[in-house]
Amino acid sequence: MIALLSAERASAQPSGRSVSPGVAFAASALVPGMGQYLLGEERWVPFAVAEAWLWITFAEHRNHTSDFTRQYRDLAWSVARRVSVGGRRDSIFEYYETIAHWNTSGRFDVDPQAPDVQPETDISTFNGDTWRLARQLFIPGGVTVPVESLQYQNALAYYGERAIPPAFSWAWGFNTLEQERFRDLILQSDESARRATSRLGMILVNHLVSAVDALVVTRLRTRENAPLRLWLESSVQPDPLGGQLRVGIRWVR
Image 1: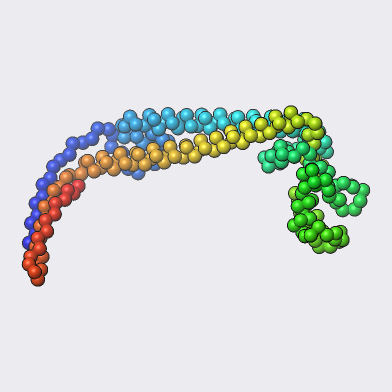
Image 2 (image 1 turned 45 degrees about the vertical axis):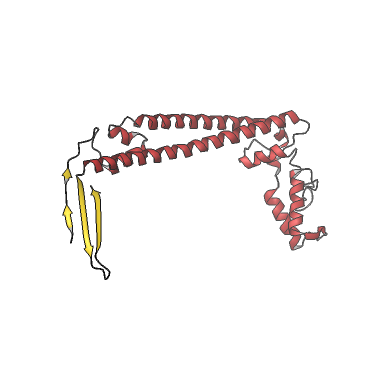
């Protein structure tokens, strides 16, 4: 036997404007706090304030990154890269990181008059260390092989791809203070870039949290607008050892 009892009650209309969940979610996803504002919720303020602050600090860190980058590039050109051949040509960040850790690039070709490239052999220089690594990779055991051999040519190709050419060569010499200042600028630029990236991540989180919050608010309002029903349900099921009575009560909106 199943008995059913239903009672309904009307819920009061909530304060604020009526906005669909999809509109509220999309509005806050695009502009944090917009969905809450459309719903008439004052909680839009912290989302909007956070968004403005995050973009302002992001711009500041980006500007700092650009300033530090310009400074360390100028310093490298005016001091360490005075030995470079030709006009100024700036390069990627990894190149300047290498300049920060090596006193000199060394020569690319120790004997320009000879045919082919004669790699730098001074391992205290960047190019010399690159040639040492190339020999370890392609000429195991440190043996001497003919220049025409495949092993030597592979090592030479490796060296040619990674060694610093004359147009980008550098030498700090005894300018240790300038090199230390250069390292500091590199670190400050890298730190500013990381902070700018973290701000972008926080901006994304602010958009997501604001959108989810707006969606939850609209869902709760939808539930409040729905009529509340009380269901009282009981049943008796046949059982070899006797009847089994089950009674359930549930609220359904």
